[in-house]
Image 1 (cartoon, rainbow over the protein chains, first blue to last red):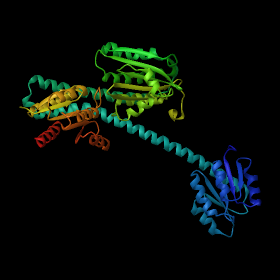
Image 2: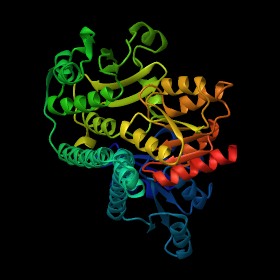
Image 3: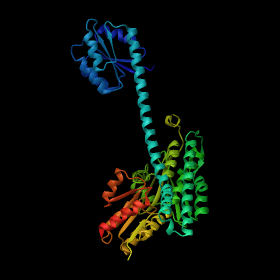
Length: 370
Length: 124
C-alpha cells in the first residue's frame, strides 16, 4: 500500500500518538493535529483517507468533528478512540458515522488492521463511484441510441401503417395502378426496416471487436469511401481538402471506414443530385476536425470566430442539440467515440453540415476496454 | 372551390400518402419537399392549413414555422407539426413557434385528417 494514503490523528494524547505513529508510519503518511480547527485545515490541504479522533479530547467536540469530517469528504473513514469505562461514547461515535471505535490504550496492531480496512473501504468506494459513473454514461448512451432507433423506425412504420390503412379505408376508390403503388410502398417500408435491423446487428458486433490502430492517409480514405457514394451513385461532385497536419492519423481503419460510410450516407440524404459535397480536414489541438457540408466551407470564417483549438466544434455541438435523433449519426458517433472522437450534425438556412473529430493517435482508455 | 392544404414532407411516400388521403376527403393538397419551396407556395397561394414535418433537408420544420409567422400573409395560417417524438420539449418548441398541434410519427392518417378537418372547420 502506498505511503501516499494519509492518516490524520486528531486530539490524541502523546502516548497514543506514539503507539499510532509506530504502528502506522511505515505504511501510511501520518499527520498529528491538536484540535478540530487544525484538522479542518489539514484536510483542506490534503485528502485524508482515515481520521482518528480521541473522544476524550477537551479542546474541541469530537462528535462535531466526526460529523464535519464526513461532510468534508464522503470517502473518509473516522475511527474513534474511547475509554473502556465509557460505552456511551462508543455508541454516540458510531451513531455519528464513525467506522469503528477502539478502546484506549490502543493496541498498535489492532489500529493498523482497522486503518488497513478503512483504506480498503475507501478504495472500494472509489471503484464503486467510478463504476456508477460509467454505468450512468452507459445508460445515457443506451437512451440516446434507443431514441434514435425509435425515431428511425417510425418512418418505415408510418409508411406501412399509413398505406395499409388507406388501402382498407379507400380501397374501392383506388384503381389497380394506385393499389399496386401502395403495396410497393408497404414492401419498400418493410425492406427499410429489415435493413435497419441489419445495421443494429452490425453495430452490436462492431461494439465488441478489438481496435487495431494503424497509420491512415485521411484524404485518401475519405476519397475511397465518399467517391463511390457521391460520384457513382448520386452524380455529386466531391471536393476533399485536408491541411498537411490533418492528413495522417493513427486509428482503426475498419472502424473509421464504417463511421465514414454512415456519415456520408446521412450527408447524402441532404444533398440534391448533381450538387457538390465539400470535405475539409483541419488540425484541431491534439486531433483533427473534419467538416462535411453541402456548401463551401470557409476556413477563414471558422478560424476568425473560433479559437484554433476549436475549429467549429463547439458551434457544431451546440447546433446538434436541436437536431432530431438520427440512427446513422448515432451509429457513427458510437464508433467514433470508441476511437476517441465524436460527431455532430446540424442544418440551418446555410445548409447541412457534419462535423467530426478524431485524435491524431488512438489511445486506448480504460473505458474502451472496460 | 376546394380547401387548399399545404403538405411539407421530404419523405416522398409519406407526402403522397397524406395528399391522397386529403384528396379522398375533398381537400386540395399542395405538396412541397423542402422548407424553401413550402414558404414560397404559402406566400403565393392562400392555404387553409399547413402540415409540416420537422426533419427536412434544407432547414428544420421549426425554421419554416418561424418564417411563416414572420410573413403577414402566412402568420395566421394554422400549422400541424409532424415529429418523430412528441415530448415536453416539442410542446415547448411548438408553443414558441405559435404551433398548437403536434402529431407523433407514425401517425394514423384517418385521425390526422379528422384533426385537420376540425381545425379548418373552426377557422371557417
